[in-house]
Amino acid sequence: MTLNLYRRHGTRCVGGRALHETTYEADELRRSWKRCLCPIYASGTLATGFKRKNTERTAWDEAKALALAWENADSWDGSATVQAAPPPPVPEQRPADLGGVTIARAIQAFTSEFQEHVAPNTQKKYGLMLKKLKAFSDSRGYVMLGQWGPMDVREFRSSWSVRPQTAAKNMSTIKAFFEFCLSNEWIERNPARLIRNPRGRDAADRRNEQKLPFSDDELRKMYDACETQYGKQEVKWSRTIHHHRVEGEYARYNFKWTGQDIADFISISVYTGLRISDVCTFHIDRMQPTGEIHIRTTKAGTHVYTWVPEWLQERIRARAQEQGPLIFGEHQTKDLNVITDVWRRKLKKLWSLCGPWKEKPTPHRFRHTFARVLLERGNVTVRDVAELLGNSEQMVRKHYAAFVPERQERLTAVLKAAFSEKPKPNVIEMPKTGTK
Image 1 (cartoon, rainbow, N blue to C red):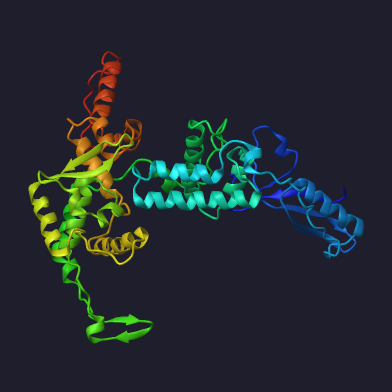
Image 2 (cartoon, one colour):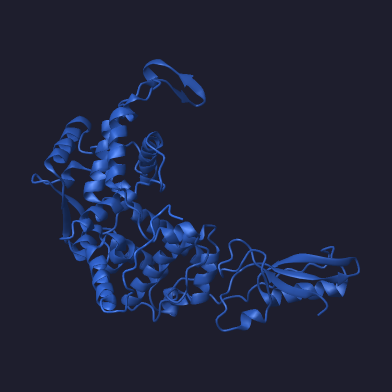
């Protein structure tokens, strides 16, 4: 073949190749090669001169057929462009002929299984991801679970136009779904199990593996700003509706948020470890008369409670009297993303008032602060913290290692034992500073 064919990788290469890196068909024959769907280019000299051109094909056979047509026509003008050969017709099969469980039934069972044990916002994310999986299956003509293979999962993942970090989270949902199907013996293997997450995590992502809680001084700084700055901001009692300025009765707000509201939001976040979506929708029924607050339900159906001090109990009850059972107000929308965005903006406003910050403040850092406070006490086991957070002990040790006292005590004991009898120099008087 006169024309040279090579694959040119882009910014969203699922194989993790560098931008504009070129590879050849022979490279992809290696056993360890990670496949991708980056386009194949052709380069060479035809009658109209030397040129590099995108074949707009991802399969080598199709790219070769197109390049051969260009060579036969001895032209780059596109007149010889050939269409990709249509896939061979798949004989129509009914679900009963295929055997096993349908994809639709498996998705319904998976959703029902986790409905009682997963936060509403997480349920929504699962639902959106599984909806995409069902649409991809329909595009392939797949009806049964057994029709999915590892290559299908790779191509499904390559269809996501998201950042690598988001793709990794989406893949965890897909793996969990197929693992659920495997545990029910609906499939013989998990087609997503051996597929690695896309590369491309930046330094910030790696740094965030070690969680960054707020310090006590930072919490005091936020509380002080709630009292002295946030509530003092000027509020204009007018708004714009459909690009027209509205004054008077239609412009009134039902409630003016103050610094005390933000302080209560922060306190509940820190003392319970709840995520921002759960704090936004905090219902008074979560709190028991004795001050215990229901924070989650385990997969076994066991309720897990935390406890808040009396002053915070009084604040929660006062808010319920003022706002109703939803202590941070009843929302017109049920979309948790919209509700949380409202409070993210309020917190961002507070942080801008009491900055600057060494590390970027985020609402999730309140949850890390909850873990930090418990671990620094020393008499709280990692197992207890893991149960309260809903994580494994391994995850707590990995993400909060700096705040686990037993870890440093163990390392210090090891170092003392290792260097206790090693050679050391005699004491030598050091020269005084400033002497010549």
